[in-house]
Amino acid sequence: MVDSLNRLSRDEAMPQLILLLIIGALLVALLILVARLGSGPEGGAEALVRARQALTQLQTNLLTAELVDRFSSADDYEFVASSAPPSVNSSFRRERKKVMLAWIRQIQQQTASLLRFHLGAARFYTRLSFHSEVSLAMDFGSLLITCRTLQILVRFGGPRVAPSIVRVAAAAAARICEVSESALAFLTAPEPPVERSIAS
Image (cartoon, rainbow, N blue to C red; front, side, top):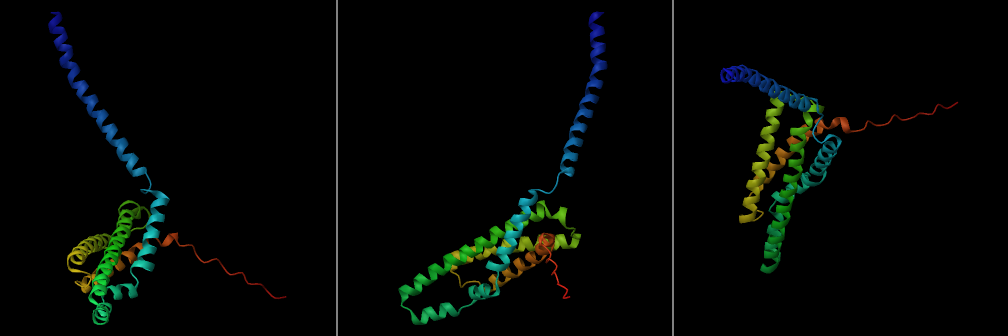
């Protein structure tokens, strides 16, 4: 009789235990969801500063028209090939290859910083339309693939192999910079008003 009573109370307690476990799991999931939704942008001010620095680096140092034109131009190579001995020509090509690979790495690093900003913090500061987000994602993907392709071509074929790909990479990076600049526009301090003295 005692054995059947224990079995009965265990049978009644099991559904209650399962119900309590389900309720507990739902509460934990709800707490995690509230914590994630309630949290601010990833990285906060630091992410904004890094994104602004990456944007400035891309716009003012890495993607200037003069630099992109120089990398995609054959003028330097033709000049060195026609006026320098073969050893200088060879050295020039090696150094130019190193410089171009360093340039590509810098573009990749700064682009990755902007990508982290857009994935983590941008949605809290700017509202992009679905079309703009898809376009931006395609630009990031295109730029990263183009940079990787350019790296491989330069590494194995030299810096003169793909002048058109240099322009494609620069154009994709410029589109990313344009969207990033508008997303970071609120960080730009407005010009202080000019005080005018009134002559008496």
